[in-house]
Image (cartoon, each protein chain N blue to C red):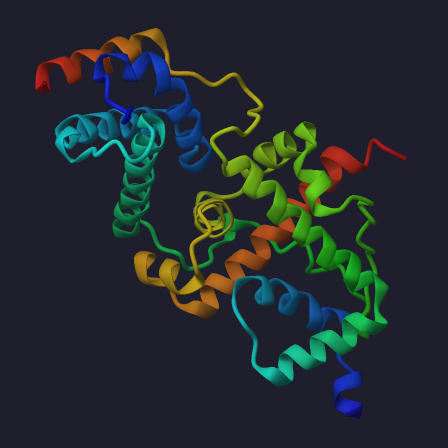
Length: 189
Length: 88
């Protein structure tokens, strides 16, 4: 039996799921709501192209991913990706001795990446820490680590210089590890 | 060789991050590997970035646990349903 579409049920069945998926990426609730609506409208108009080869849900999420990328593309027109003071200092600025060795030693988090990903509290801590990044850092980090886009794609879509991209990613990661450490590992002695 | 061994932690951390995003030229990659082979602290830093990457991938999935029970408001649902009805 091929999958079929039931557009009357979309909002009730997938609305919240799509909203959460979008909110992780765009942060702003109004923008997330708007993207869900735009996606469902586009889906409605594209119903004829649905061939039943995927599930209704993955078909809708495919369109959603595309609309989210559109949102980031539009942002480049009114956002500069040059570094500014609002991006905050690099937490590693004072992390070294003069000879270039660590002064503030990174803590051993004592978890491997797969185990960490199964820890709900940790995933939630990351969500919290991401919301404390400046929008610029957050957007770039999302495209790289959540959407899994290549550096070349991001530079092209957002019109950023590669060196600028690496600096932003490096600093975003440093801010996240500082925040995660404070959130999760400071209380656990 | 001695130049390679004199790479500091401060030089290394940006390279660790950069290597997560794209390939590095052989020379840089070699210096990074040599340093990581000798420096347990930078290994810890590298592991931390890998943990952040794994957490991000989990957070981005459509089954991600979310911190808030974020949901569309009833009002938003009604509005979207109306919009869909009008264009159908």
